[in-house]
Amino acid sequence: MKKDVQHELSIIFKLLGSERRLAILALLREKPCSVSEIVDQLSMEQSAVSHQLQMLREAQVVTVEKVGRSVYYQLNDSHILTLLNNAEHHVDHVLRQMSHAEAVAEEQAEAKKNHQ
Image (cartoon, rainbow, N blue to C red):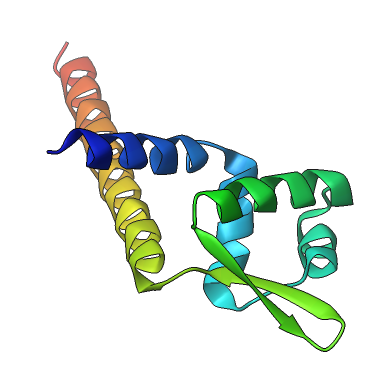
């Protein structure tokens, strides 16, 4: 992997490391939103939402579209959506594996207890 690609990936993954930014991106995954819509949906302060959106915009994760006097934020492109979807699928997969492993461990512990 080229160094410049590594650098840009590290920036993207650092941005995705924030639950606040992930919550914002989850909303934008559904539809473009204004700052006030994000504030209302996530019960965050307007200044915090604006700050998070600025960071996402600087990394070209989101873009801005002006409609009349309103400003709407949206995911920059389908690559961001794919990245988010793949990350979510990975986490779902890991959680299912963990749940299965826990269920097997519980069954084994119960069987061991019953055989004593």
